[in-house]
Image (cartoon, rainbow, N blue to C red):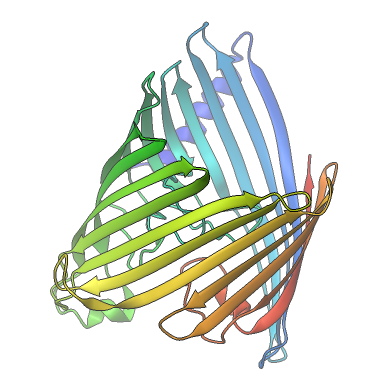
Length: 379
């Protein structure tokens, strides 16, 4: 069976060749150059160049309905150096490729795209389909092959439903990937509540074991998984939110089949100078034998401070504290924006054994201390 992205590319080809009247097409791009240095033993460094060319299409069918598509490539080259050895890697792959049909109160999107939701900002129990790292100022993440439908009610309530297929990489907090031959389904309902909103979310998938781990499980090669979550966000002079997720996996090699993820947080902008924004969160993760039983896990606290020095320059700092291992993670980012150019100068000082965001990008490079320079050009 063709993957969804192949169908999308075929549809895009038809759209272009048909030359629909009154169409709007646009193109844009983003180029990113980065250098990371980690002087901890062994000395590591990485140079990278990425370019994201994008084609956009918008067709207003009438006053109420529109048709859109987005096709973006991720082209990158990285040079990694450590222990007097180098590794050069270059690749071109789809980053986004979706079509959507929209009305005044609904939107249906099909293809390779990003799905994210929830109330938390830094440590997110509802990071189910993306891998956005709060330390990344560009908030980049791989997409998923999916059909996503959303309906918006006039009272600001909304309903989401999704169908995923053909995804064989881990997503979000996942340790084991999904079986790409099996569909994943789920949905979310979000309602206005008090001074904010509250939402419930559900997702079902079938996972698969691979590699050495699968060899230890005899004839057991897969499992089913159910995820349940509730989250809310409220404005009470300060912003308050919570996220709570419960995951059940029918694993037969462990009795700890439940996972609990909980986040509570708050944010407030203090009237100091140009305005100091403070975000603070507490996050806990536990594996347990029952829904409400005691279990093994970790607890993290996080605080983000952001201060605009002026209209061009901004300073941000993020601090994590690992309550389980009594470790601090520190990150600071200075950014300058000039028309189409953005320059980021970042520094980090973390434990050698990196415990958070283990499924997100190059976490090994962020163990210990080091610095990163990123230059972004948008056109």
